[in-house]
Amino acid sequence: MRVQDEEARKLILESYLEENALFMLKTDRQTFLSRILSASEDEIVVSSPTADYPLPDMTVEMHFHDEWGWYSLKSIVTAAPDFDRPRVSLSRPVSTERFLHRKYTRVAVDLEVQYRLLDGGDFTAAKVYDLSVGGVLIQTEERIELDQKVELKLSLPDTELPPLVAVPCQEKSETIDDTPPFYTGCEFVGLSRDTMDAIRHYVWQQLKAGLP
Image (cartoon, rainbow, N blue to C red; front, side, top):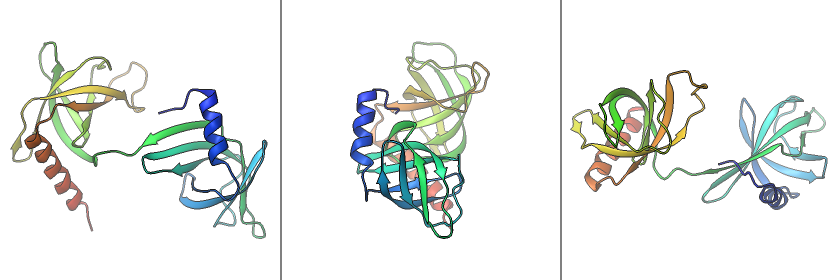
């Protein structure tokens, strides 16, 4: 979730952007552990294991983790490291976002689902792009409003699940304006223990299948 309140954003910056603070520096190519060497009103100087990357004017992210999630602070590289100076100069963060750890493991899937609004109507086919015990990401040809509960008929290999109730909670960035398809993340509501176990078993199977 994006931190909208300016005062809250300032408090976050003040608490994390201190000399010797450790964080994960994420570029478009890699993520590595870094340390704040100095911080001023104009720039932040951090350590770097590379001698020629990241490049000036690149956007990078500073990730500060805790047990519940992490803050992502976007910044701009103002000076790249060199052979004699393995450090990077960054602008003060231009935006701040908060991310929470997922309670349930999510896997990419290629499944079909039938859905309809909970207040009635016909079932319509949709695609499932990822699945967890907590929810599902579906692709539809019509937009699902975030204040509408939906009923889902989802079948797993060798398992027929009872009808599921879900609450749309986020329209994904893959959705472009009003042009279909639409990608909506939905959170399951009131799952029985048997249904949770069935989904968890399927997720585990997919995870094991992906292991080398």
